[in-house]
Structure formats: C-alpha cells, structure tokens
Image 1 (cartoon, rainbow, N blue to C red):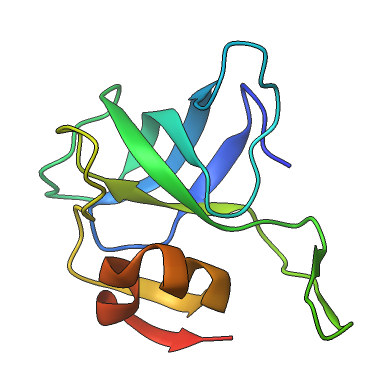
Image 2 (image 1 turned 120 degrees about the horizontal axis):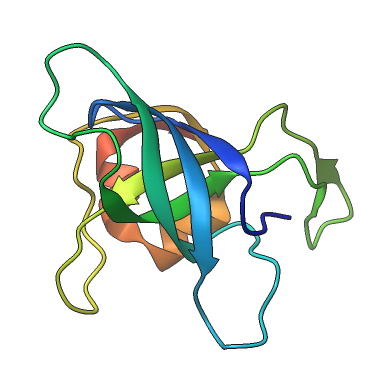
Length: 124
C-alpha cells in the first residue's frame, strides 16, 4: 500500500534513486495505490550525471510493494521493498523513460503493460 508522502526506490536506469509519492491517481477520494497503479512522484535523490534533475515531477508505475500479493492458485508473494519505475509524461500511453528495469516484475504487470516485460530481465 502506497500513500502520499511515501518514499520509494526507483528500479530502472533513468537516473533517479529515490522518489516521494505526491498523488495517487485514479479518483479524488483514493488514498492508497497498489501493484500496477500509476502515481505522481517528486524526485528526491539522483545519480551522478543523469538527465533527470532533483525536484522534478514525473509519473511512475508501482512495480513492487511490501504488501502481500495473493495469486489465484493460492500462493502468496511478499517482496522486501516498495519500488517504482518512471514512465513518460505525455498523454494516456504508458511508456517507460528507462531502457532497463532491474529486479523481478510480477506477471500481473507483464499482461497489463507489455512494454515493461520487453525491458525487464525476469518475471514471476
């Protein structure tokens, strides 16, 4: 569960290290975001020599959460961190800014967002 003011890791090679959730998209009364939701983030720390600057506002896709994910076959998956991948700002199309996503990505995302499975290494 991600809400406003949550600090998140960035798991792609866009140049940002950590971001802060500014707004959860999907309705004006919505308080929490889960796996596969889009949020608006502010960049807090960046890597050296990156195109992205500290303080910029971007959209991000939630890739991993600490909250337990229950699958249809009865098993559950717990991950160790809350992390996002930055996506493009333009329009309703969701295209990743980065050319690579580090770490595993759930199959739920690979069905909904096929662009992320092309740049990811592994799915579960």
